[in-house]
Picture 1 (cartoon, one colour):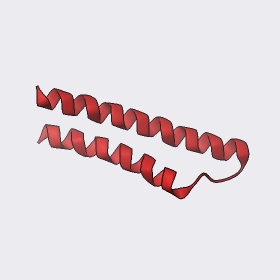
Picture 2 (cartoon, rainbow, N blue to C red):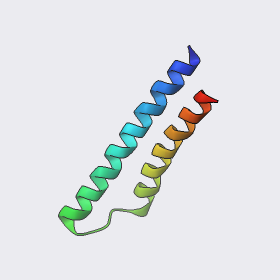
Picture 3 (cartoon, rainbow, N blue to C red):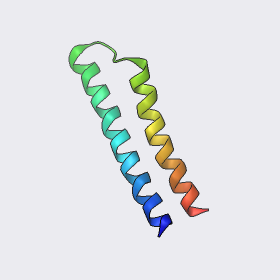
Length: 59
């Protein structure tokens, strides 16, 4: 059962991170300004964390 929970958290995390990165790109396109760097780093960390969780479940 814990593996299933890890998988759900991982998929949710990757989805939310991807949506966040998409929003950051959209904001950049609409305003012509870059969003703060820490927001980009946070988004990438969320996606990578989800990917690591998936690999942790598979191994």
